[in-house]
Amino acid sequence: MGKNKKGVKKGKKPHKNKPTSKKYTKYKINDGKITREKYCPRCGPGVFLMTHNDRLYCGKCHYTEFESKSSPS
View 1 (cartoon, rainbow, N blue to C red):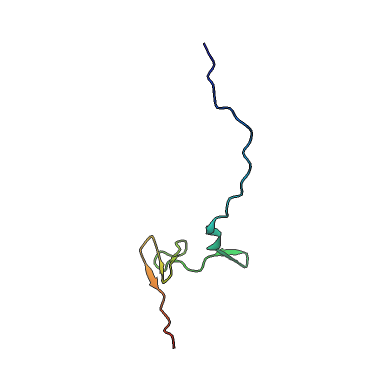
View 2 (view 1 turned 90 degrees about the vertical axis):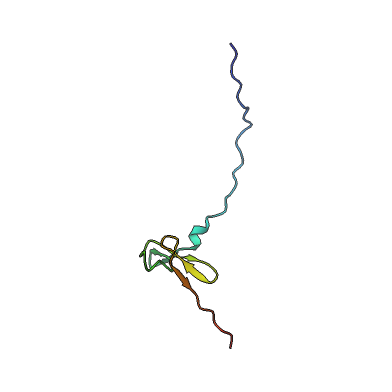
């Protein structure tokens, strides 16, 4: 009986640096504590609001805060 042939390895692949995750841009460190700007007033701390161009949105309870447009004077 013959031996099963497997793919021939040609050595290790070179290491590629991956871009850092964007989740770290959402948090800030204040006095040694990790904080985030806005959390949902209905769900409480632990459920954060997503930031869009003109509004803040909770994906859990669908709470929405619209940012007021400043009128040019």
